[in-house]
Image (tube, rainbow, N blue to C red; front, side, top):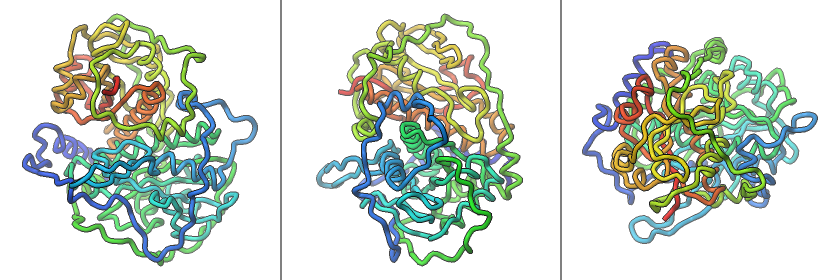
Length: 508
């Protein structure tokens, strides 16, 4: 089955719905004590320590989320310290909490991850950078360190694998995000393929924010020949596969040739209990691209997601003025960020919600993005407790910087039910959903559009996390009852499917 046969995406999506998805075993039980190892470990490979390379990002978090200030003159190129910042603040360990007997110490990372199972791995492919030789590296957050996988400049392989992506052609550094899916599927079963893009998306949000703060151009690259990139990293694709890339920097063309691709000298420690999950592998294969021409064609597709004219009352955003916005450094906000486990049933201000939406719900610079702020989804809100905003259901219009009231009323109980019965949905001040017109997305982008829609929504949700914590609020992502969310926001959302839910409130 190839990318154009979109019954694969529909089969996977419907099979992993809550409730009753036929790819999910309702009797499945996850034992936290038997959780997989949270790190990929190479044996026999040299490494470079990054322990002393970290420094403050140097820009307030909310300014970085807004894109930062334009770079002056020629685009900057990263050096070793910039790479260390990008990796640490994207996927590094920021805190360790000891939960005692039965759980033990849990190392938490810079970005949110379903179940704190941290199944996303980061790699760097670069030309020669100040302080770092050209090569292919794996980020080991335990040290932290770069594991040296290949020496030499292999960027040409990524240029060819993307069919000449303009961002990749000029980038001195390409970050590659992969998924060791069993580390998440052990708990979430086949739904873990959605989580692959949810959890890599929150990481990408951090990456893009750090790049913006450091005046580095960065673009998400989702159109590439999967086999080519997997082979460069020498991945066992029944256990791990590449999800997307981020091209960082510019003005550094890749050489015309790459060194020969030899087998890696290092081996990977096996993951005890790791199993193949056919439903995930089939969906990933069905959304893969076979050759550079297919990557070029995929990248040229566009979707006009211009929303209909508002019919309900509009509430223009009232964000905090710049002089009242907190100036906490992006790095400190990333370190402080968590996932709230409880919310107090107290209101946030409309200025806070407005600031979060204005800074977060903007376009992701990606190869699938057209001229609209959001390429593949739209934000819907259940406002439970927001000062100066009536409780109710809303849709957000980023072009107008306004919320359209769909239905006024107190929907706390419904918000909790829609969040799979979790109290966090009911207790939060606001629930923010991202819904995508999946029929149109798949028709335009094929099965791979499913990847992109999940990724875009998760990246924006990752920004919401950071904006909320910058404002000293809390946030957390929740799972949801798929069809019930669509029904709740219908008729406005009748043609859409849920990609992500993030809640915001005052942490208890």
